[in-house]
Image (tube, rainbow, N blue to C red; front, side, top):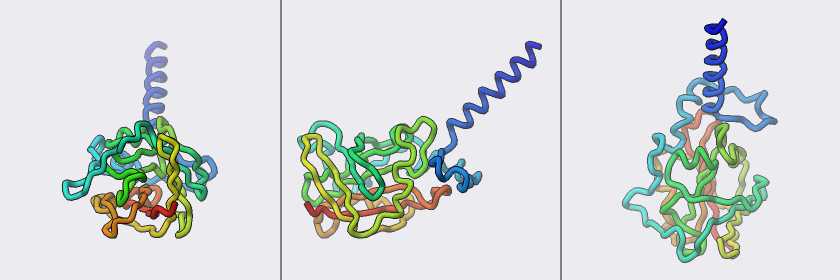
Length: 208
């Protein structure tokens, strides 16, 4: 009897552990989306190796994260129904997996002219992810759509989408400031769902 009980407890514990490791789908899409084994294998390396720093290469011009603005920025994207979402800073895969969205440490801030504010969000997060699929519909962004960032002091910056591209995971150049010295924002997620093989980048330029 005790062996049977112990076996049942072990099976339940293992099942719970597996469930927390799997990406989760939006409720309205869960019936039609099909997770393949490759999705599970690569889920832990959406932006590189697990817990690897997401800092820019030495060639990139690093921007101070605070710039005199203490606190956390917030993001609003009307097209994606995102409103006043706090964006914590981060530099590791674990931070992204826990939060669901991070402002990449070392990248720009919108109040610094010529910078590229680089924001990374999950298309599919995990059971423990605070915002599990914040950029699930990022591919629906089009030129002219608005991206709004509020600084910790309340100042607001409005960006207008001008480009969307798919790049390789190692293409760190997308984190660099614009060559024409425009102040920009870049939103990144993984694509295609659920393989996570490439990176989807949506870029906007400061207009107000």
